[in-house]
Amino acid sequence: MTTLIHYGELALKRKNRRSFENILIENLKKSSGGRIRRLNGRLILEDGDLNSIKRVFGVSWFAHSYRMKKSLEAIIDTVIEKLGDVIKDSPTFGVIIKRADKSFPHTSLELAKRIGKEVINRYNLEVRLNNPDLAIHVEIAEEVFVYFKKVEGLGGLPVGVSGTVLCLLSGGIDSPVAAYLMMKRGCRVNYIHFHSYSANKAVLGSKIADIVRLLSNYGFESRVYLAPYNPFQFSLLEKGIPSRYELVLFRRLMLQVAEKIAKDRGYKGIATGDSIGQVASQTLDNLKAVMGGISLPILQPLICFDKREIIDLAKDVGSYEMSIKPYKDCCSILAPHPKTKTRIEQIDNLEEKMNMEKVIKDTLGLVEVYEF
Ligand code: ATP
Ligand code: MG
Image (cartoon, rainbow, N blue to C red; front, top):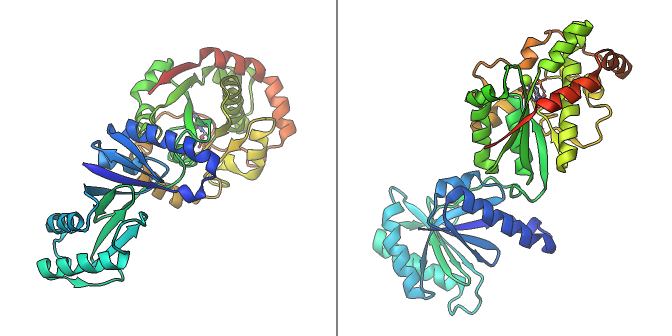
């Protein structure tokens, strides 16, 4: 089986193109299990799982294709033979020729007419140039391909061309979608999750592992850092921190731990699923207080999305059903009514009071890494 794969090459600068192609080829091999050949400006997949291409970023479209000798007779024979399988009840058809090889002895118009005539004779269909029920595509370049159905790809950039980011993954609806959108722009995504289990290992049996496995369909390899929440909780109780500040302080802890890991490992940014005003901890004032002092870019692909839009995307990604399953999230243990206007000076004082530096160090000491 042969699949023709096109990618968005027009957007590419010449010097990036080769590495873009190489990374896309590796990703296609990993996801489909097939062999890839490179033609001018497009790729050919031999064998492999066709459906998996729908999950590979960087593909603009692909088509299950037939190959034949580069001659008018061979093209007509293939079209007539294969059309029988796809014709169903399509009363109209159109022939679309792409003739990149200008040395091919027939012009596009000539080809379209000859093929069209044979199709009418054989199947009694009617020609319609605009939006026909059945499109017969013929592509003539180094090799010749015939195909009937273009399938739209995910677009975006191949995962890996933009470097690696660390995504704060909560198990809710938003953060898996944020990770997906980062991958769409070519980022490899690793994850950090803060949990309220007594041991990191327990997370591996939870929905968090399911979500990471799902996201690995798009990102191929996922590294997950698991961090327990109890050093933070212990300090909250011991130092008597007012409950309305718990959530903002917890979010500061998460970002500072993530920043340390990201810097040590050379990640280029930290991604979160924040969206302005969605919950009380996500007012602009709170986002400012939470993110103050972090020196890596904090990437928030959902920052202006409505919940409705995020849910629709989560359904497309496939994470929605996993995300709505019950889970003992740390944020749900924390006090439910956080201050909506936290000032950075208040936070500085409270961080000092609870010895945040030590909490960060203790938490980092308990982090474990798992590969998916
Ligand atoms: P989500 O649906 O992703 O849980 P949310 O709308 O519930 O997001 P918050 O709980 O305020 O929002 O969290 C905002 C962001 O903080 C999340 O999108 C995620 O990036 C990060 N986050 C929250 N809880 C955790 C956690 N336990 N571990 C890691 N990151 C977290
Ligand atoms: Mg959450």
